[in-house]
Length: 130
Image (cartoon, rainbow, N blue to C red; front, side, top):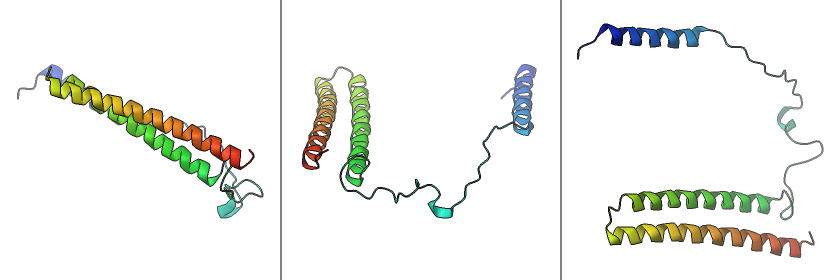
């Protein structure tokens, strides 16, 4: 490998810039914290966290929200995989059909997840008089 003066100058310049960026102190404007109260400092006053099973901010609602997030993330990943499969199918009808099915089932799964979320919330509000 032949190094030219231009290559060496570029390498030396970028190295000098990186070293300068690391060595120059940076200013931060963080807020002073005077937290007192130990392990319970993060809890709102008088609260012990989520203690109800149903309702707003409850344990069940939190679990349902996390599951909906996971299902949405998996659905987006499957949509991307289906798109990649469709792109690399190279016109093969079997691969194109499989890619279209992957995309279709990912969308159907997302719709079913949203409907399940709506139904679960509707039933919980009906049962808890919320």
